[in-house]
Length: 277
Image 1 (cartoon, one colour):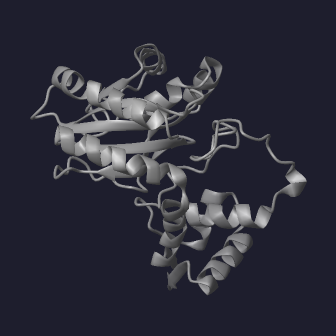
Image 2 (cartoon, helix red, strand yellow):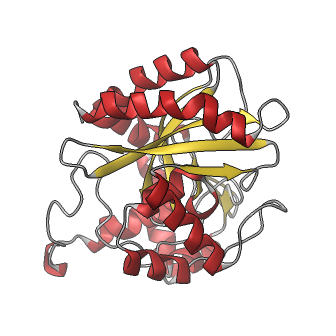
């Protein structure tokens, strides 16, 4: 589980749940929310691959809690089996995986997309994945390698920054421009590779290009050696629910070859899924 940064309350407010149409329901009244549950989940999300072990003070700082409150949440989560402690350090336990498994086993979207991913990946002999937007990141909900392991990020449950990924740009391109501009203004556009787009205006242009083309390409911006082509996945009403990509090794496939060889198959998969989403 990864929590790159605590989500700003305005981060793409109203993100559609992966299996729901965008803006399916208005935001609930604050009086209807259980603050304790919200904060407890925030404590779980505070742990990530960069900080797999945290002290009480670190959890408090990352979740904007008092130290006393962070301690109570950690004690409760340890009692329930979701974290364990070693002296002053806390870490998540495998029990947390139940949350992700519950989604993967019950949600409609991954179950519908996965077979199409398999057909696409094995027809092209390239890796393919699908993801949804969650605040600053894209979460992978389905993936298949077709025998080619091109990146550790191409597996269900992984999170990657939306600004430097093809799936992220495709998903952002479906948003109103004002919302995209506000989203970009909140990002820390870090250069993950020498190719990463870090200028807000350039990123804005790349998202606009994805909107006009109907697909996005990213050339070694997330990882050196990784090229990706992505298209949006729409339902029968034309609402974008997710994005699907094909990823290749840069040493084997040029960007032009990727688009020429994979875009027709991606568009065919897109059309097939639109009838059932």
